[in-house]
Image 1 (cartoon, rainbow, N blue to C red):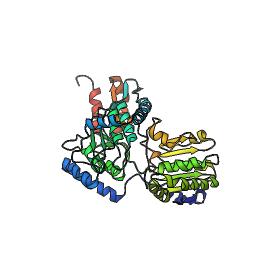
Image 2 (cartoon, one colour):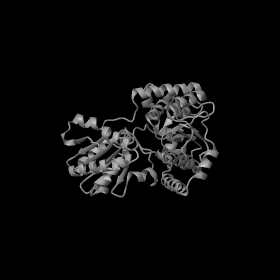
Image 3 (spheres, rainbow, N blue to C red):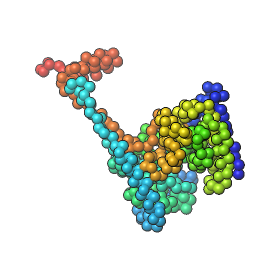
Image 4 (cartoon, one colour):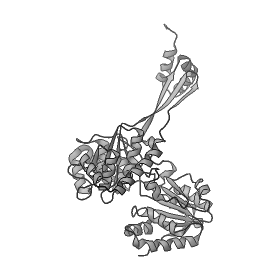
Length: 433
């Protein structure tokens, strides 16, 4: 098995070609969106029956979607000590990192007698969507449930697709048991998102849905937005590696392969100022590819969505990385720490030879639910703030209100909102008038 990866010289591209290179979207195609819309509407109006029907038609469900405590406990009992230790180690590090993100309330007094409190509270209920079915992602269960628990969310509901025989992966069930998950359903795709958002006869709706999923899950999350909050639309997983001549080409190759194996639509980019390194990387990829379990998926991803971008300087590579705003950015340069400090648009950045992306996926404690499709320019990794809301509390004294009354009256009159002005004037009128 041998593949070729598209190569381009960024300096030779026109401004429009450069824009097209970074322009992509985490949002599903119109066809996928329409299909997801039909599924969501069916579940919204048809409840449990429609959910079961969609599960049979599209997969991921079973006649009785509730995952019992016994199923989870049996999976934990059957799990090897190695699996148990890995689950607990990952949980511990994720909890350590996220518990320290808990927001702090703020009180300010812009003028005497006018106080504004900014207060944060955990959400009452959250739905954690965990991909499953053909593959299992206990790591995604940990990344969504542990921060919710650290935030103090009252009710956490897990949805994950079942396999064709109706079972859920045993490692995922074992992790759910260790986490103390009390409400879990075997359901996937757009129908699971709809059930979480709208509720059914047997499933109460949640206030927010978090977690990664396929194109139908992403489309459904955007469809239910407004009825139910979401964390972010999550497109195909992606990686951008910045490397210079000091990088080990075999390490660069495996870092590209590591992310591309997520799916055939996963972009994997190498940006380098060393053309000889690029050639060596491709040689290592073709040497390793036949030995990897997901070699067919990898071949599709790298052939369709792989790219080697040649630049004049590493400074150019950093500029391109900020334009591209990748989900994962790995920096393998001689001055990796200094170069990484200049990257402002990325979901998660991995600095230097000893920082593989896989470490963040499983064990460092950082969250691996990240913005994709260029959304890292303006969106954040999943964090504890995603599991709560802020509110503003405003308290004024009479002197405080008098001090800002002219401003209120002037602006309210300019906007034609007479009652706004009157609401202040009535409060400040002399006693008995």
